[in-house]
Image (cartoon, rainbow, N blue to C red):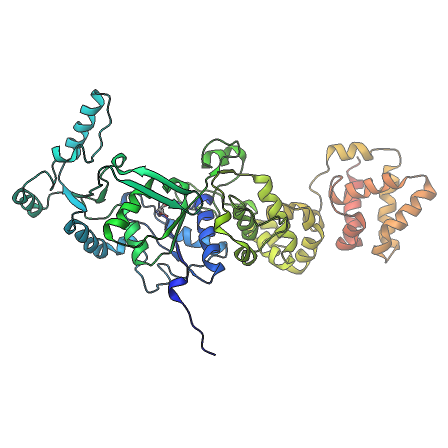
Length: 505
Ligand code: GLU
């Protein structure tokens, strides 16, 4: 059978972070939506590192981005480590491309050289401020400034030869209506006179975000630009850049923001600190160490499932959905434009669901990665115990605490629980537990035998159960008592009861 692939109809999307620090979950959600959208039709998800601003670059950030995506099960089809046909995928390695493309814009009259120094521009700003105006480098001011539009060809050639720091600016047309289209937000109109002549090439010969971004999206054959709402104000400029080059524009979709839980502003590290939750997917080992959702005990599947519901809802499903299921259901058209508050409880709810679906063996790896005491525990037993307690856990980090007593003797006894069991006959119940351990070889019938003894000796089932539980667990908590006894075995039950009786409570 001959398989025909229509390359042109395949979706190509990109996630284009700047490596300026650890990836925030807002960025991760953008990556996720790009991924879901591409994979639904078998398209390509590209990771492009936008590292043109070397001053803001942070060591380890690129690796963090890749690790965080991979932790979530998102593997780019093309990236700095997985070169495809459109590389390099790091903007710092593409300068030869930008130099060539900017020349085309200058030659076609859409961009021009500007020689104004920082000091000169600062004084223009000051002058305008004095008059209560804002300085804009645009159609009104450009001819009074130092650039290749206002100066003679000879002067310009002279200055260029000296190659003293000059920038290249975009010549924004005057009074042109720019009709922008966004898949989520629809059409809007903006007058070009409101825009400034943005710098496209900086004095050090490297491109600015706007220029490199548009050039790369075109050359990498990106069909859909899906990015955060914060880039919406740049859309008109990007439309003009595409027009200036005479290039076909990709479709654009600007995703709604993830807001702080209290509704005010973009979800920030500070509001996470206040609410006691991280805003990063995995831990960051930079100068300041940051905890991620991974260390907080959230499974990648739980985080991915929750993030997918921010701004989009996978129909009326209340089920835990895997990445593959989300891919199946995703609809860019049904993403909403309104921002959504981060909701820790909802995240935990999804995580709880994914914990139930995960195999015990898988969870053991996660538990042992988080808890030193759990690392000393035998895997098979740990897996069995995990199966017994996981329905009570919202995070993986809670799991060890929920089952610790199945492996370790109580370190102490909860005061409130002790108060409840301190009644006449406490020592008798305790002795009976010890002697029953010696006289029975049926751990599975332990509680029943204890209750029968209680009936004969005037102790209610409640009192007996509470006493045994406190002895075994250290307090009135934990799973079914008989299950605990069967799991730990009679030797441990006896040992804990002896320790308890020696405390003379
Ligand atoms: N480098 C930009 C960022 O850090 C990319 C924006 C875009 O996707 O166009 O978010």
